[in-house]
Length: 228
Image (tube, rainbow, N blue to C red):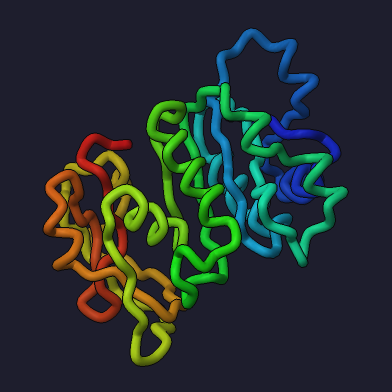
């Protein structure tokens, strides 16, 4: 089924050329189908590339997916024009009264800063707080995952003595997780990071469980036991 995005969004043409089923929002409004509503908080520098990467994955579903893009109004992007943001993205004030089935919070190249040193930290905290009441389930990626663990559960990140870089074997630790349906018992994952979260900190939080990990690179996927 298609993902519903603006026909003017650069990702629309890219995905269409890849034979991914996209449908313009104005056309989708005429179809009597209740779409899955997903909001993406995109804090990556190269936003158009990230849009395409995530939308490729979201298109692999039998459901119609309606996507809103969100950006930080408290941060000035150096790599994406304000024209692109004002044309295709929304601010938190514009969406805070909405409800969504899912949310994705991306990574950002700020992992070596303390969280409170990130110029949009207060805004992302406000958004993460809002997500607990207005979003059914949230997926945090990369630095977004570290930020979520810190904000919601007080789990710190640690600077590594050297960069973790490479493709490493991982194993499943929770066999009945819905998130891992279709995964092989052993699978490879690329890593490129300067910081980590530690198993012992996560295991102190009863609401959390470690779904996948690596003997080399450590914790990989962590989930709230309530699925949210």
